[in-house]
Length: 472
Image (cartoon, rainbow, N blue to C red; front, side, top):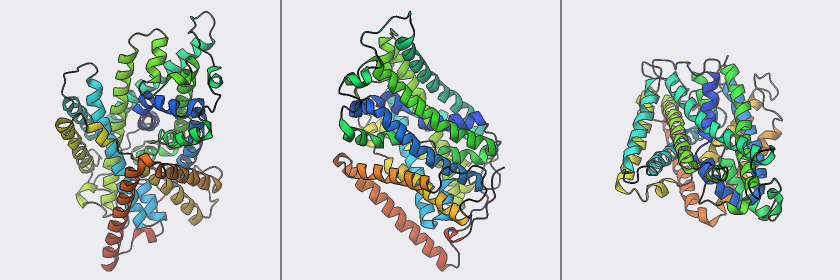
């Protein structure tokens, strides 16, 4: 493994504005889980789910700030994979890069499958693979055309989700507090404590829901990958990081607060979206169709972001000799065309799966990516800590992480706690074994590559001092 050269013959084009970057991060983090899966979260913890999201939002804020400082001081196209290699070691860089690529491939595969399922709401006889293939072709074309086109598509897809959430929160608050509007029977903020208290499932219910709440923020880290293609990263990256975590927190907490005030938490379950329930109680008869459309845009948005991230991650891995060299090439538009194409080809296998086994495709693809994401977040916090130590701890920084180094340890403890909760959950036994096998295989491959390169007279990047300058 060698120092990171420039990727290909053409530099990335800086076409992403501040609004693009903010909405890319929002689009990656606010997926179908909020619209469809929040009912299960409410069922599992009751009103205390609000506290779970506040706690996890705090932990993710620390991780995001660490990533922001790393990004501005040491920009890299594959972001945290390079940071891991520079500040932890070559093995960490290799494992992090391939794990993050695999994370988004699995997420994208699930989202592509969901497109087929969602379209059957309106067209029951439509083969599931048809909309999946169309969605993939559209997303691939957008990613290959220009980074600005990708940013515009992501902006509008994310905007649909955000407007829906804001309408839900605004409508709910109006029905609860504005005089003169028709009242929904039983609607009251008192519902948050009237049915078994704020902790109806006890502290254990709160603890059990923490991993789910934590993964709701997955996608925030994409901000770092946009830095090389941002017009003014020195301004847009800090704005995006400071704003996106707070907005996601408000969206999740606000929507669940309204839902559990409009109706008792005992009425919600994983079988129905709280959004459909609230809109239906407000007299909007087309609630199910509206939410189905919004969820469709949500999965398209998430898959769009995933293809963007995986293409750039492969290019970065190839630039460090950790993937085939051809994947490092940039096309004439300043895009990692080969990396995007290979990632899209992997997603194309999902379309085949939808054709062969449509009734089992989603369950086969929803193998948890949680361990992969936890590993990436932990690497970010460790790499940031070691970077600060190398630079003198309190050295001048354009975007210093608050409460360093205590915040690093708080974030790492939170991630370790989530991993342990998952590992000791019997329902996750198979996923835990698969994750352990994945990390073990990647580590052995990385060690072999490092050994081979050193024997040829090279020097691993993990042992070098980074000489990368800061972003404007």
